[in-house]
Image 1: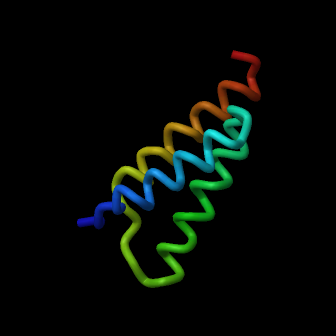
Image 2: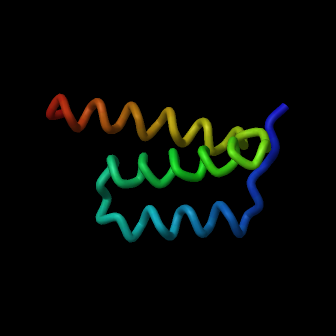
Image 3: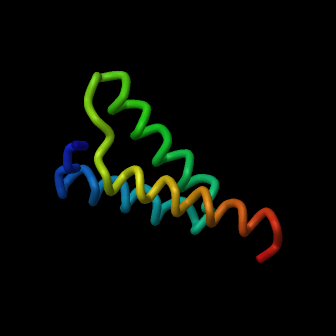
Length: 67
């Protein structure tokens, strides 16, 4: 079972995403970087971070297809 992100960690990530000018590619890069940090430290990736990654990947694909 994956761990939960602390509300402060999640709020910080959301704040960084808000600063990215609504570019899904930048948001995706931020989320991937955070996932990499969890994996490098040997921690399980939080469920909400995994869900966010999948959602942003889909959004990036749609944007690249002009949807």
